[in-house]
Length: 341
Image (cartoon, rainbow, N blue to C red; front, side, top):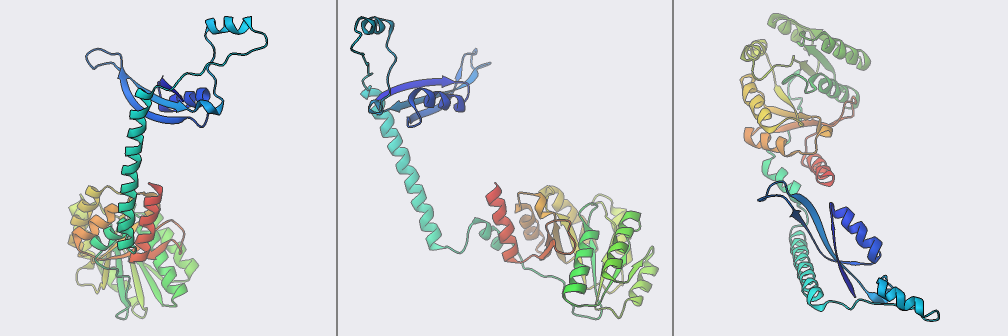
């Protein structure tokens, strides 16, 4: 057996040298990063050490030294092959360390296997969902009409979510639906919702004042579901939030869904939710699940607020990229998060 030490600037470079010198079947006995050079611990360079071994029976040969070459040249009919004997004092401790590490890995795998067999139905993402999820409460058509408003900060996708909900209830469930938008701050948002309403063939009312909102509700009173789109409000602008609350005061709102983006920082999600409590929302919608690899924020917010989730959205396509926030749906996306991690 041959044992050699290799030092390189990167682990990949050291391994490459091992394979080139000892062959692809070489055994890595030990590897570690270390600091080289410098002064009093400063300005040192990080390097990598790899200790590798190869069985001499595999036909690996050591190049002869200059003295050996002279002996080889003197004998035309006989070639000299020099094999370095194994250094037992170096190899045995390393092999023992490798065996110990493999034993520890095996024990850890067996422990995880026992846990999975004991509770095969619940993985780590499932536990987090069970722990933090209050319940799933999608829109329920309990009265006639059922009035549902979507509120939230700018840029979270309220208008697109309204369009998805309207299309699903009107086209797939056969319900009569009407739309109201009070998002008159953004002309583009009004035109966007008007376009969706024309495609789905739904009536839409654009209102600018609380009095007009009351009239719009009266116009659509024969509908089974009225969906209300609102302008984005900054959680830091208390005046805007008070204006929005004024629109709804005394109006028959059955449900108010706070729309939040899943790719937002936890501290910002919590600040937004606390600010919008003034609007008395009673559901949570999380959008843009396709734009984040970490869903723990939405579970943390739901658990802190003790408010049920209603829907999640996973893209811009209308009407398909929306799903009820059930346990199975959240488990599916939490599973994708673990796979992509």
